[in-house]
Image (cartoon, rainbow, N blue to C red; front, side, top):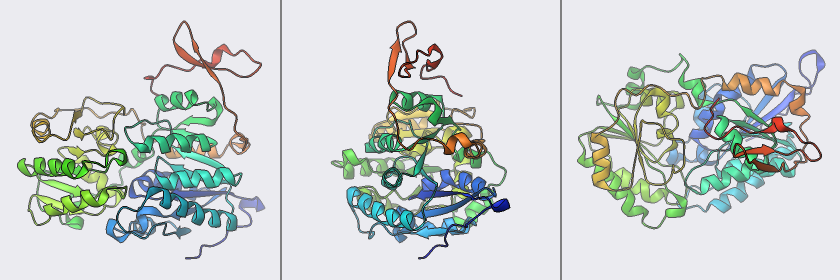
Length: 418
């Protein structure tokens, strides 16, 4: 599908900054959406959206349609895989690099914006870095228990600008050699939407997705690419546990990582059971309303450890996929053990206050505020590794500028949030 060329000029004849957003999943689009919307309403910028990955697969809900329904123009859909099960991630990466590379050469952007830790994200960072184009990485510096963490850190090293969720992430990036000047703490962009007053009502959500039951939990379980062996047994245990419980569940399909077919095959056995409603995907705002009113999130999605606490919703975090993530009191960690899962459902924390460790809903404005500074656009394309030392008195890393001793460059210890 063709896409219109960049405009030759902006207000008062000035050239507009050209910003390309790369999205491959329903999850990262939910994070990028408030940023795109804020960029779209500023005359000094114009945007394009490169939509690929799961967005283009009918078995996962063909969520590129959600991008169109969000009111955005300038969308370039690109199929980077044939939709067959167990498509290898390295081949998806190669296909995405090829497609995005052609797009960037035909429509050169000033900035490529990527989010998180998916292979499409890595492709965006590689294409930008190798085409001498600024790359901005949203939510780098996070840690988890899967190969996704390796991808996330690789993306950070290929990126020139970092827009992170909190000070913990900022410190980690500095430990990786990134400079203070390249990192901005803006919070998690999806919190902007979560705390907005524009979400649909629960009645609208029930009607739109035909959810007939009252109280419910949300089940989200994804493959762990480094633990594919034994996956069939683990997902069978999880499904057996929720069947044995007396809960109703809205069940969302897994992502398309290796092993997703095994999970989907087992999850689809719940169809026809009146206590379960299985859905390929949901519109982001509708999902947030569903989350806000849920009894709990069950599974291994980052939603249970990131978004759910913003609403004070407890979660049963199963397995290793979210290992090392920031832990709220609302999160109960268990292994893929039926008895443990059932016990966790019976003893969930109550009256949990909302948490704002990942921002208070100002991410989009902070992001665009950075884009409006000349200093940001003057960021060198040639990156330099910034060495760190550990301060003996405080046991904290300190940035060392070659030839300059800067005591003020001490970095706060991890755990200090902004």
